[in-house]
Image 1 (spheres, rainbow, N blue to C red):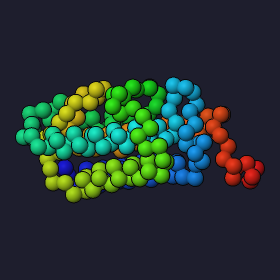
Image 2 (image 1 turned 180 degrees about the vertical axis):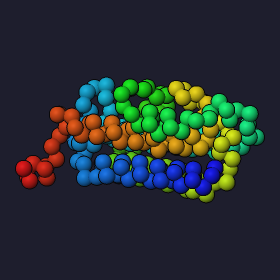
Image 3 (image 1 turned 90 degrees about the horizontal axis):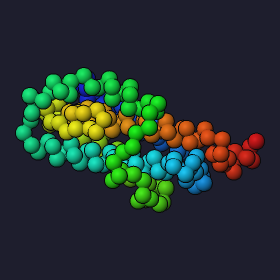
Image 4 (image 1 turned 60 degrees about the horizontal axis):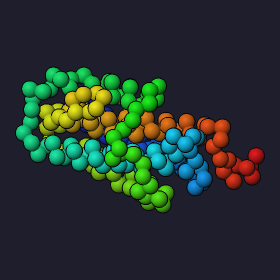
Length: 187
């Protein structure tokens, strides 16, 4: 990973973390658990999904780095960074993730849920900031994007978080979204 790639990666991870934290700041329990429809996720569901996905991806990266590099596969993954940064956060198309990544109420306490997200993100940032591993020559497939190298997977972690922050913003913009008691008092 080149220095400019590392800078971009750490910056993207920090920005998507900050957006998530600001998006959920000050929400009531009712707001955090509100679902716009029965088949839609709440804000808490989104955070759980992001946390689980991020932890699994980082674990898979660390696992694949134990195998020999495969520079001969580089061409198959080349040039997907822009797709990851532009298309993954976009919400024009719904995408169904793997069942293991679906929200199940793993952390019913919201503060614990946020702590779990923060811990997962800290692990990703720390790894991205210091690793000397050959991320560009270690690969595993994404179900929609095909083969990605480990650097691209880390970019995807950030872009995936941004995608679900946008989903949380959609939840907050829903006409049925509960009005916070402090907002009612100030109105």
